[in-house]
Amino acid sequence: MLYPGKLLVIILLFLFVNAFSQNQRFVYEYQYIPDSANLESKKSELMYLDIMPKFSKYYSRETFKNDSVAQAILDKQMKATGKIENIPQLAASKSNTVKYTVIKDYSESKQLFVTRMGRTKYNVSDNRLMQWSVHLEKNTVKGYNVQKATADFGGRKWTAWFCADIPVQDGPYKFRGLPGMILKIEDSTGSHSFTLVGIKKLSDQEIEKISPTGNFVFDFGDKMDIDLDQYKQLFLESRKDPAKSLKITLHDLDKVNMNGTMVDKSAYIREREMQMKKTIKEDNNNIELDLLQ
Image (tube, rainbow, N blue to C red):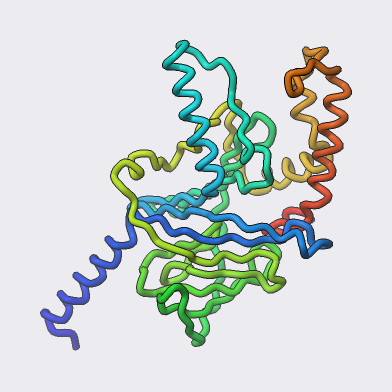
C-alpha cells in the first residue's frame, strides 16, 4: 500500500523526469552500410531527435546545417535585392546525407515520414506499431541504465536498449513504443545502428524554429500526402527510372547551364542518369529492406 506522502513523491518524480525529457535534443550517431557488397562503404552521420511536448522530429544534423547556411544566403539576397537571384547549391546537399525527416505526433499517435523525390515532397503516413519483446538483460549507454528489447521491422531484426528513467516512448528513426527512450538500436546484420552520443536542452530560440510541419528551407515544389503502399510504389518506380523527374523539369529547354557552361540537354540528362543509376546500384541495403522487394 502506498501512503499519500510516498504517492506524492512518485508523482512529482514522474512529472520532473517527464518535464526533463521535453524540449531536449537527443543526438545519435547513425552508422550504416549502403552497399551490402562493399562492407567498406560504411558511413556515419549525426542525427537529431528533438523531443517536444506534443511531437518529436528526427532529422540529419548535416542537412539542418546545410539548410541553415542556405537560408542565411537567401535572406541576404532578399535584403539586398528584394528577390532570390539563385538558389545556393552547397556541398552537403550534393553528398549522400540522410535527407528525410520523421515526425511523430504524440497527441494523435501518428507518424510521418517526410521525403522528396524530384520536385515533390511526400508526407508518408506510417502508423505501424512495433511488436517488442522485452528481455531481462540490462546494460548502460552513456551512463544511463538501459534494458534490452527486440523486434522485427522493415525486413530486419532489431535489438534495442531503452532507458525507463526517461519515460518517453520514442527513439531514432521510426522506432518507438517501448516504456522508455531508445538510446541504442542495431539490426542483426550490423548494417544499421543508432547510438546516443549526447543530450542537449533546447534554447528558447531553437524551440521557436522547431515545427511539426515545417521541413527546412527548400520547401519548394508540390506537396502530397500518401500512405506507405503508395510510397513503396513510387520508391520502386524512381529506382527504375531515376531521371524521370529531371526529364519533366527540363522538357522545354534545349540547353542546360552546367557549372557555368551551356550544354546540350540530352547529353546532360544522359550523364545525370548514369550517375543516378550508379548511386542506386550502390545503395542496395536500405534500412527498410522490404521496400526493395
